[in-house]
Length: 325
Image (tube, rainbow, N blue to C red):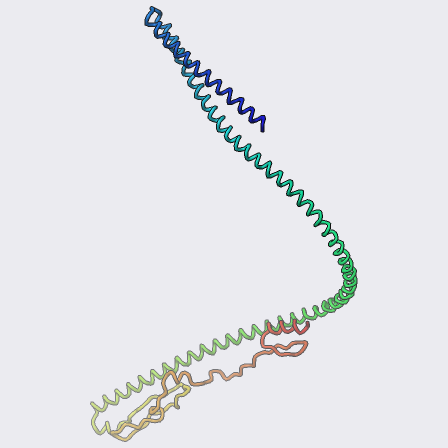
């Protein structure tokens, strides 16, 4: 660091000397230029020679100015470098001081660490003795565990044999599952077919009732027309038709009524069906049978171990695994 400081001082002095030399050369060039102008005025000299010398002097002056500017720039950079160097040197001294303090603290820590390590060494010795005793106990426990492992191997071999039986049971369960799925699909198809036929039946019942109502209205209209245009004797002896034939038995509907005759000039009294007709919604909700076949009861799946019944194959599989365990 001292060598660098001496080098920077030497470079600074050299730059100062160069600046002084450039100043003297500048003054000398100025004197030479003035002398040249004076000599040119007072004596008759070749103008071209004087102009050439003057141009050369001017060129030298420009070069001198450039060198001077470069020297000033170098001097400025040198001053900045010197300032940075001083700051760096100050930081260096601070770091050296901190390093000395650190070495002193480290020596104190080393003394404390040595004492701490001695205490730890004694503690480790005690732990080693304790762990040696634990190791002996662990070896005895390991021997016991090896015996238990041998017993577990025998149990595993038995479980492998039972696993083969479980595989067979799973195959049977899969067969039961496929049968159950097929039966359920058939029931769903049958239920859909029943619902479709029931819907067709309800549609036919509604259509039949509509036709009966239209027929009754038509007969009533014909009867009124006959009363208006026929002779009185014929009207008195003509039968009055109150309803038509119902060809489809509907749940909740009375038996079909045949037309009846009434006394002349009087309408027949309404029957039980005409007095209390059932609403259409109530007629559709009355119970009735579409097919006269018996639906088999739901299939049950039994555990081959404990003979417990289950309604689903998935429940049986879970029970078989837990039951075997």
